[in-house]
Length: 191
Image 1 (tube, rainbow, N blue to C red):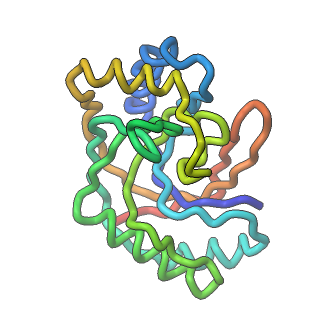
Image 2: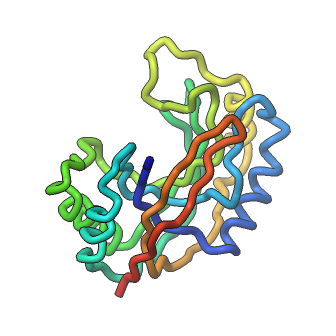
């Protein structure tokens, strides 16, 4: 199974973000827009594994507090001048990083290495091509995402509001030509 650990997004935010995507989509019809039903904030990607029961057990030991999240501004990976991924920035309160650290510590004994890169919370809205932000250095930017970037430079940074995450989840990811489908396997309360 292909698994990841993430925070879910409240229905009100899904709606606001979907409306924003609807405004931007005509500028970049050739990119793959993420469906609002799959919006999430990845805390740790696990990849293909058969250790589902062990992962579930390890995550049950993780303790954390509810997390205040502010959705603000937009950005592009790997860089604004070569956008391949369009995302919304997220600022978490002081409880977010300790949760990410605790999840990493719980999963490390099962062979899941912690990310070496600094954790930067974000919510992906669209991907071009393979969507991998750290692909080939000579990869071309998506013209549509360039148009989105230019449009956003003329507007005030969007503010989507705040929410409190009261749980984190273990998800299964199934990829297909129609896009990724995510299934919640288990919920873990915070606080």
